[in-house]
Length: 310
Image (cartoon, rainbow, N blue to C red; front, top):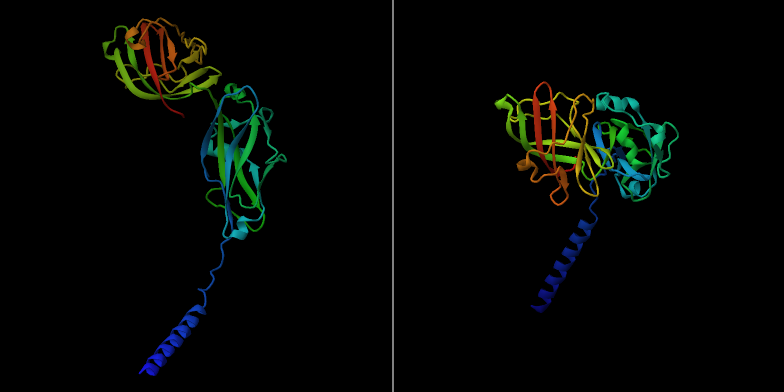
């Protein structure tokens, strides 16, 4: 009986061994044709805004992201060179011709991505799958230029990489931002002499304040009357706000076209929460007023509370 049991166990062991060997020699699934590595601009085919911290000294800014999608470790671990063209047509098309080219004397090219007058060269080192095109500039210079930017378009890539068909061009608009720059919640009250319909409280609604100098911002978007449905001023008349960085007191300048004179009457202390036009750093809130006469008296008292960056 014992011999029969031993024989049975031996035969079972051999059977398992044979099955195991057969399973181990099964062929791998057929190898599919490899896709080629690709190069893309993740923010492709759009106008993006690079709001850079304001500085009177030269800074280096990463203004464009370039991505490498490798198909194998071998792809990822080789050096990959990409050429990116400077394209005014891309800038014009994607911005609707609203943004003009950043003047060449305002910025310098970075040694990480040399520029030959037509193309920037981006080099991925082994293991890198994201690179950034960099420029150096004094961002305070941007405040006097209006809307400026650069257009970028993928031009070529070596080592058999292909260029993305859907993410191959980007327009970047450059702007400087100080600590007052951003999107604000607007509340307050308006007085239009002789017109009770347009007199009273307004808001909340949102408006953007855009940097115009080291300590000044320009209101962007029209000012509304009390009922929130009518525009108080035609486009281009919005106030510019200057904050004294030491005292936090506010001064208003003439509107951009200079046709309406801005003053500082400080008469609605219920809105201003005090008797001075000022910036409150703790709550990131601006309190200010302006008046004008055309042909009757108008008064606007504002409370602008910071919500988020633009």
